[in-house]
Length: 310
Ligand SMILES: NC(=O)c1ccc[n+]([C@@H]2O[C@H](COP(=O)([O-])OP(=O)(O)OC[C@H]3O[C@@H](n4cnc5c(N)ncnc54)[C@H](OP(=O)(O)O)[C@@H]3O)[C@@H](O)[C@H]2O)c1
Image 1: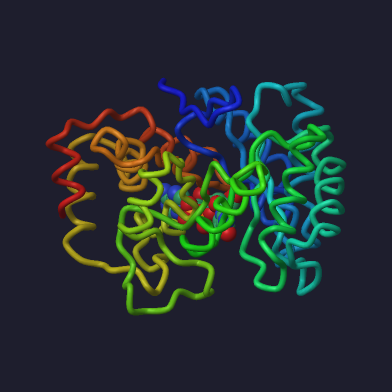
Image 2: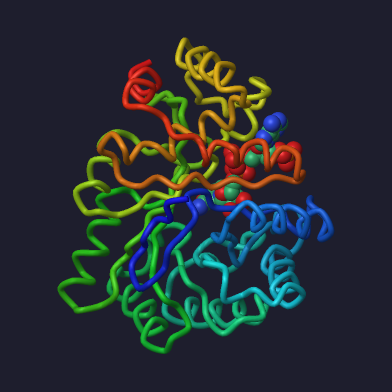
């Protein structure tokens, strides 16, 4: 399996495991089963946040579940661990001010039972704090060894670029990974997503990432389970012949449609796109391992063209 190089000796499996619901709607026992299954299939890239999943609990459950898993499996050094700061917990704590970043990294490290995270993301833009303050605070975490590399999530492309422009000017650590909503199906550009930050990656953003050699970690990459159950597709999804093309190829390959969407994302770099790493979670090992099969499918140029141009 070709691992993807994020720099600083960080090499990730081409699919990331989302731990968002672990410890709340997914029990600790089921979470451990999914995590173990992922590692058994070669996975090493786990994603969480300091506020998962506050809408179903307090907001520290996901990180705490991962901390317990690392302690039980003694495998922290084998995993590329990403967490985030910047969103609220039940309306409280949102922001990327220096004191917030310094406070939350220590909370995350405590919950995760570790002394460093590999990737620390700004979870969303903070319009009330200067980028210079945010980037300086993040950079100091890198210098202290609490964080290895930085990522940005849910930024407008221009704002992400501006953050990196400031980082370059001030000789600070830039964002070298982007996390944004992306999947095989298009969303209707003229329909506002449910939340303002939740924009799907469009062609312009893909061109930016390619030009800057920044990998894209694609969240909601299974469209909330909508490839198997169309009624679960987000309301702004375009449902047209593209879905049939995906489903037909999935049938030919003997995999589920979600796995086919995963395969398409994992193969995008073979046709000139930046590296795209689909990120998804599951409450069940069965769904998860079925979907993960997509990471192992090598698509020909012709197959990629059929899927991409549909
Ligand atoms: N940066 C951000 O702002 C942001 C936002 C959202 C999420 N995330 C990250 O991305 C990860 C994934 O997010 P997401 O929940 O939006 O993911 P998603 O990949 O769009 O959807 C996952 C859902 O798909 C369902 N599913 C998968 N295979 C299925 C199948 N064969 N049949 C029926 N349902 C199926 C799963 O249900 P089952 O549980 O039943 O398998 C699960 O509920 C999160 O864990 C988090 O780490 C980041």
